[in-house]
Image (cartoon, rainbow, N blue to C red):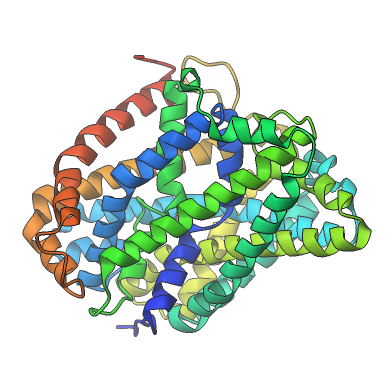
Length: 459
Ligand code: PFF
């Protein structure tokens, strides 16, 4: 059996798990989903879902991981429930799918770093051409995947932990400084209003589903990434406080990313609902306005740190299929890592081509009842993020509540958390896992599939 690493300290584990959670999801995806979802209404839904559904699922993923010391597939088997290992396998597949296109976007972020450092502030206006440039974006993606594989191949404690511990605080400082700057711009307050004052009539079923799947995606939940990270955590760790810190760090960074973006978006008169290009189109102009030297420094640093935030997430995405390959197929870690990374890079090529470079992949398919064609990348996103993650969360909550059972979960959670027994959190997790998650996640899952893939809307 290949040897498993361990996180060396509490702060190291929380930093690595928070590093997994904080990534493109918070800084790239969250603001544009808020923009598309009508502003504060989306923010409110997202916050509610993080606390109600995601926190309990996060705790249970960590508990399953630490109890078994296994990857998601092996974890279910090791608890004695072979029939449930399909949930782990679904997680491994979801991880592969997500990483295949996440790496493409990470390549954009890294490419923007290079462009801004070279003084090309015009890149904001050239976004659609940039993402079509297969050689550039493919090359940046390759560098990114190789960097991810290098960290993963060195094992959890030396690679993942160290990177996460240093970079997150610097990223926060940059974002907060940009918020302060953004508030001095004309129309900044319109952006703040859009972001913070909810217009509840903007809540459509689509907004609800997107906020739900985004909450799972943002916290790296539903595919066993945190089962995998949990498998490296020591028994003396308090999983509840760790989960709380991870959740707060993730929500906090998403929140400040939004606070930074909307004043910029409104001050430049850009439509907030423009989609995936939002930060890439808006920010270069902001950096240019800082003057050429400051702009290069702040802008370069911003996209560099965004790339690092993405890197601590791609590391955890790759770690899931790699730990599966190492544990279940007994392949040495180094070999497994490079092999899996290569396969995922190849699977990502159609996504890379689907942003304008290839007509076939850019207008790949239309779902039933809709004639708007979707790009290959959107289809992969729809399956992985919008469908499989909430489904994974649903299945995990059913598994823990009705198969593995509350007593076993609680026993694992009490280890390292002396005050857990009899606490409010214990009761909350119990009710959430037994009733709230199965009922609401189940209902939302069915509604999402009907609406997304079959254009059937019940509400
Ligand atoms: N949470 C990451 C982000 O917000 O960018 C994305 C992610 C990482 C999702 C790891 C799932 C995962 F397992």
